[in-house]
Image 1: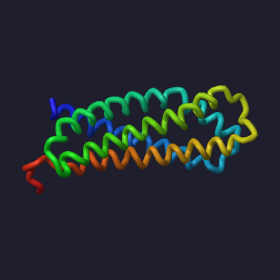
Image 2: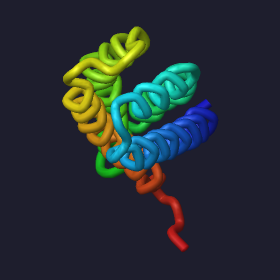
Image 3: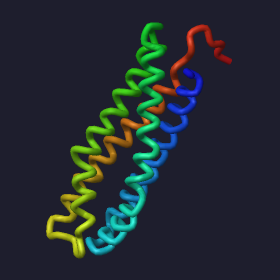
Image 4: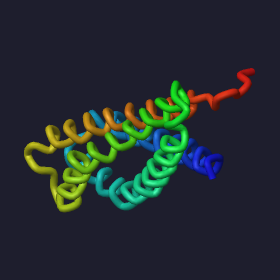
Length: 153
């Protein structure tokens, strides 16, 4: 069971981190776009990216929680790295629900960008950059963890 949880944790956390990096690159590429172009691209993004994020983040967090719980009695890096990874993934959830999802919901209704569209974009992109760093660090914690007694080659 632990081997499966570790595989799911690593796989889905890695896919999720890669997904967030890809979205960050896309968003940063659009920094010079005008409001109409930005709104059109966001409408396309919102068609399925929220679903993909959910499909990747939930299994990553659940499997990481299982790994963290199983490794907690061991102490050292075997204990703390999965716990840190879980805390980072939970912080992604919190930031997503506090900032990104409310902005996504508002952007669904934009027929034309509002006057403050650039400030809204900046807030979304800043929150997204923070959650991207958290997801990449979580994946790093999961890949850095060594099993007790494992041979490092």
